[in-house]
Length: 496
Ligand code: ADP
Ligand code: LRH
Image 1 (cartoon, helix red, strand yellow):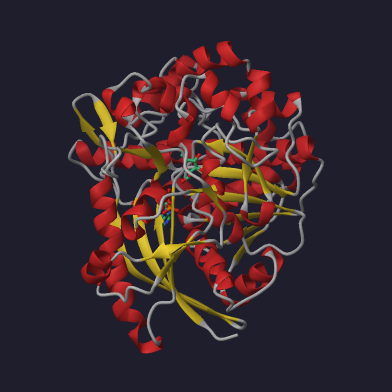
Image 2 (cartoon, protein in one colour):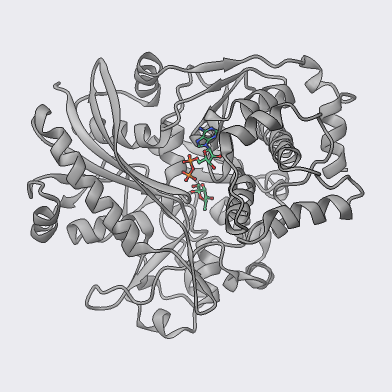
């Protein structure tokens, strides 16, 4: 097998990037060729994604990737992943009807309760195995069921599938991301047609499913011209849910590990062979999302660094921006456990004044309001560490899988304070990196589909371990596992 050169387009809620990867049996090399910001846009009372801006970012990135790949014989493949649940609708001519809406938009308020009352929370979990988040595609589609756009829709394409459609003209739904809709049957692996029709949604809008490694199609001629790429470059299906690709990119050895894919969200859990569909799992709001190679991503969504991002955005909007690295240095010097919040409180989900919401949470719960930005950052990071440790502990209890190490990947793995606090709160060693686990997982699945590497996830992961510098954090206090420690007391403040 020869080495291949592939482009991995990875769209995160805070930024998009196109990475160029060279992959072979003893080669894994990743270079960033293009990065662009991503922000939602409030328009006429609805929070949208700038989907054409994202598409242009992908085109610009592919052009840059093509130029950078010239020295190695050109591009062999393209893969796209993005955050989950959001979608665009196409009409009968293939045109986009309406601009895709952000999962943080308020249109889904109250919808989940109504759907659960209709179909039953137990039944829904038994079919889909999915944690209840108010923005799951099922609730978005029900919220918008009567709109003219929905009436005109012939197809619903999840965002990475929509971008792949624009590149190739081929429609489909890649399963790892389809599993986040709340409309996929966890056991059969197909669309849950009874659920779909029962909710008054048209089954015809759900495209045929495809799997990571499947061939999506060749570039449309106009796209080839626009990007300067050859028309015979294939778009390949990858774990198109960014978290699925991130989990492929976890450099773990064996199966006794937990992962935290740490970016805008923290996705915290374990990798399993079979779903956990027990009532205890449902009540703990753990999800069984489809992973690459038939694995199950058994995890919980923790609100993540969104809290910090939204503080930074608020301060910037108020005319006094803060520098992230300086802020984190100052936060490390703050006294511990002044105030903690439950990051998953729904008040923190929508965009808006985050420092005010955190201050309000603290005063409502009888804790001191953080008196500086550094104190605010400290409160956020300790709160995330508590939520990380709680999810790692519960994932083990609920699944029966015990773990020896916690892998942190994604942009948040650059946050040394968060890594150390997470190790301390878990009472387990943390291995941090790679930062670009998602793009690496995307690229590795393409390379395998192209025959440049072979084997299962463990083989791909040994390549990752060999070619990526990782950093270890030892828990500074093993008392974190003991019920009477400071971490346990802090957790009890939010989950009393
Ligand atoms: P997403 O894919 O959701 O857009 P990323 O994986 O790119 O998220 O991670 C973004 C996060 O990474 C930011 O919110 C920020 O907190 C963190 N981050 C990025 N760079 C640094 C850095 N130099 N030091 C600490 N944290 C960082
Ligand atoms: C992370 C992520 C997460 C989803 C959320 C909508 O980027 O894909 O796995 O729950 O975005």
